[in-house]
Length: 358
Figure (cartoon, rainbow, N blue to C red):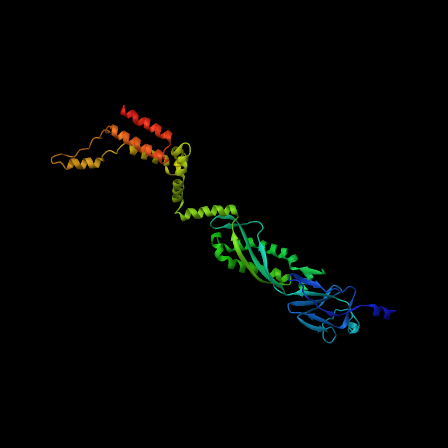
């Protein structure tokens, strides 16, 4: 009866794995109640490793090569239960293959901004993203800590854990560096190297090697970036005073088209540069000629022989002639045509000037 059971059994004489995708990291050879024939062939290709697991324990690890499963070629399989039979009878053991090819272009990034202290801006929120690459180096550690008895295990299943761990160390790297945000763009390589050094021990615990980690971009959230752009614009224009003057000059044509004209502009923006006073002074100068300077009068008196210098009396305001009033009205009307004065403002000034004719 035992002989009949032996004859009915199926035996495996070739054990190998032909990878059909680039994402699988661990694959269990399908046993399906079959046993491994004594003298069977184990083929481990380049970029692969194989692990024999017996009764839940890792028996041995095989690198690339072709192996005949006999006591002479693999005496290190000391944990297999048929060792006492010198493997001359079939034995059953789980065989796992592992891909050691490099997993490249793996992306990481901050799903939410990371808050840090900044030398220039105080507290800021940053975004960062980049890529990393890794490969499997210790299949025994990977089997016992990650993949276990799963039939297959892919890099995609592991990627979330790796990516989130990288992001979790971003704030530490930025905070420890003390580099202001403005200078971070020129230090991305250094940040990547520092982050890689911090992540390598964790990768090693999983049986992996972190081959590279790059920081491709460090940025602010959109609302903070807009504020930074405004600040940069202010600095380019020579400071806040020059920037305010520029904004005022840009606003004059728009204000002249609105109800209230420049008078409204003077009320709204006069705090910055006294725009209302400047406009009023300019209009007053156009209507009333400036009196002669006292120094010029004194100089003229001293130039006359025999005349002693004495404090000059304050000259009385010269009467305004009709021609001057008409000329002023024409100038004001020209400002209306240019959109600097509104029609209402012109009518008020015109009425005041016409009163002087009476």
